[in-house]
Length: 375
Image (cartoon, rainbow, N blue to C red; front, side, top):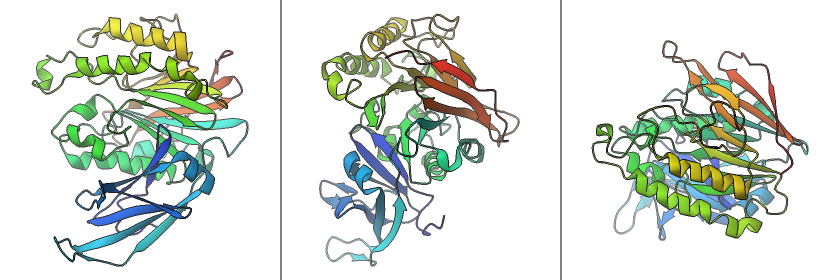
């Protein structure tokens, strides 16, 4: 795919709530917007076109892009931005097709899951090519950068998302615990999709409904590793309120017409504590699992964090807190070979999920068939 020189990599179309956030990382200052149908959607701050950030993010209603099936990125390079009579270049454009999730095949939905890349790019991209043009949804599930101490680390997110999706299918992004570490962690929401700044949200993509949860850090707030820079206990308490409130809006959320699959996407498989110092807030996580099991009745929980690849069922030895559904953990890497990566290839069809773990060398595990029950 030919890209303009100003694009750092291919754009990505992130799904959040009832909209897409088309994200375009650039190499030099510009103002930017996207055109969908006959309407423009601008990257702006209360009417001021952004040019100081090298990550442009344009929000488009899901219904508009799903109907149009294409979008055009428009930009003007900055010559000099002044209080009066700024100098900008003429408008340039780049267009892409878009395929909504579930429209390629009426029966199957192919999902690829990547987490814990820790700044690796080539390996995750190679593994993520498993489905080729038949990929319907990409999930980037936390710890894609190694940390947020250097803003350049965010480029791993953009490059993996843009290259694997080609800018033409939806991507779901969730935050991991390593993403919270470093001076630029507080700026992450300016470079990655959130629901108006909130890193937990729901999203509906055709037959799929998903809740994206954020477990935040994996040790107590007072752990010296964090140096008094986090308040994750309070954050998780607020998130618990969000989970409790889902049932009240169930008819427009997980029980909405057309929803066939209900997913939980979380970096940390919170139902399986792994010994101190990771065994934190077990009562809270047990409540999360209980709420999900009682109300949402999810089909699958998809996670990273453990740097292992496996499927665990409710009641299995790893289930310590009452997991509400089968859990797929799908991320593994090698300390010796930075080019190596293994992720998860998931195909939803009928009331089953076929799960295999594929790597950057083209190797694939034998597929496991997961019965999704009768939700």
